Length: 401
Image (cartoon, rainbow, N blue to C red; front, side, top):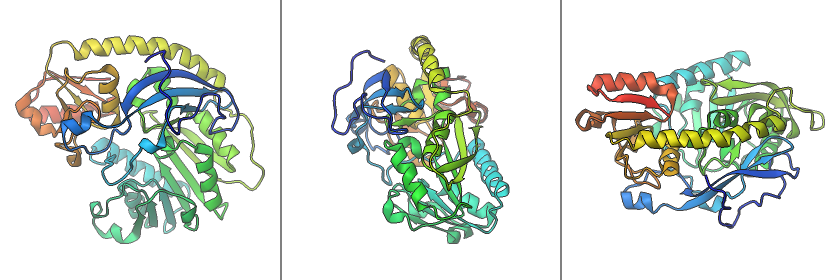
């Protein structure tokens, strides 16, 4: 973190501009970091390419009116979503269990057996295929990072994909369910995006389900590894609820899931005028501002603790070579202290971490390397990581950020 303002970039949003979520003035910058990789999930083929990867600045601003947080220095021209973007978490048993439970819950709760689903930002299509299989549904997925040969089996006949960004040209697509998971945090103009989704919905019976990270947890835990360039928009349950109401939705349910790391919001299109009614949830803009005050102190203390951990002279690897790992390594500037990043996703193996250049290796690599310390980028995976370490005969200390 630095007190010095980031460099001005084409496309950046000055802090005095209106909030992209509620449209009112009052963004107040509270966190700044310069020169972070503009992507952290792209597959990079050499250490040199990884270290020379384009960088941008982060200047997080809080909207005093609705509690939304945005990167005021975000430059969309630095983004390059394509087939090289490897975001899949589906190789984790813990994540697959969560995905199966969530898909089944949505289908049963809203009686969607045999219905249709549209998923905006479907990634590699894994969740879309899963919910279509569980609910015997048919579906369409939209995502520029979709890769056609990744899905197999009979369910492939139930789903079709459009490898593009969602836009007005896709507004003719309909579904009894509209899904959008871990996409809104990548969208800078959040209200415009939600209004586009609302315009595409023709029936008030259509169920809309969004899932995205909870910024409240990031602030409470000073989880700086969850702040990275692709995430230009940060919501708490309250600020997300307010955006949905302003965008013409009746919110059916909103809460936390996946060990309280994710927000899940469920809604239907409303027929009345947009409402500015305050959220009944506790995370008011004033409460978020108070959390930010303690965030600064926690952040400094946590970074000091983790720097000592990483520079303790022990052979150390991180486990999790996605965005959290990139943010962890670049923020703490640990390019030389940690040589390898472990990931169970085979599509990442023998690629390199953006910004710092660590080689991504399979868990089996540790059988020979024998690290003394393994730092898990997400505590929810500690049990399955420990099982892998035991299976491989690795006696390293396992800890989580």
